[in-house]
Image 1 (cartoon, rainbow, N blue to C red):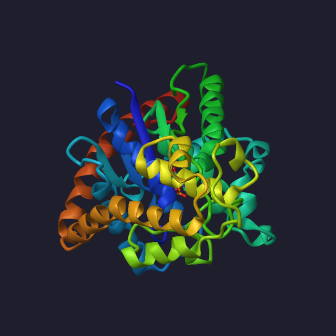
Image 2: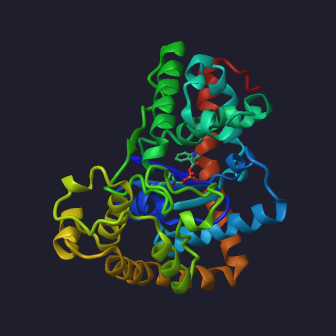
Length: 332
Ligand code: TYM
């Protein structure tokens, strides 16, 4: 059976982009694959973390996976740090990743900004750890949002470089699964920037934990242009904010953007935004409620993570031993 691997960083709150671009697709895909979903806590360390917040966010993210519909009885859910094989494979793969490939990664450039010399080595080698996450399970498919595309291309390149270096056909080249129109949800304050956990302004995103009031306020304040909504999708091309809100509506309502325009063409944004808020609340509230219920019993969340870690480690350690054998590491 084909195997899915994907993960999210337990950094701040999950937002609508994470949900529509990734999490929701995991839920839809989980039945058809051997599925592994990770809380990538080691990746979070690439930016400063407050220890208590990291612990809390790790449990919250686990609860969010489950509340969104990831089923712990069918999938492996675990924290990256609990399976040390990720880190070990990351080192091995880093020895097969030319600097020229890593230097191309746009996410590093964005996150390091003007202070490149002050950025950590971890932030720089972040995509190699990500490749290790995927390859240590020999995953064949990786459902992610659009922003992870370049990292997945690198993962395929590194897998190919390893296979060639040792004349083996060991690692599959994993396929990105970038699904649906909402693979890139944009900021509510600027339709040309993606919705992001790291945006300073909380008004730029809808968090999965926002209550109905907050969701309504955020959509009401969302940037738009003065024109009424157009009749056709083509007319959205030069209107990034309008396009984003229509895309979000379509994704939440499981329909095409054109169907949304058929309903709202000619309407003012104020009318449309009210409908959008109501829809978002209807979709997100049950999830937020379920998250709250799960978080009331952290012991149960920890049990799920422990049991997931055992299953993940069994697979990862078996593969790591095979990899060590291929590269000639003596295991006396
Ligand atoms: P992270 O934690 O930034 O985001 C988690 C997932 O959400 C998607 N996403 C979005 N999708 C649509 N619109 C947006 N505005 C938006 N923002 C985020 C991301 O594409 C991602 O799928 N490097 C990864 C975590 C990772 C990983 C992996 C993923 C580590 N190892 C192995 C897959 C496989 C990250 O930082 O995701």
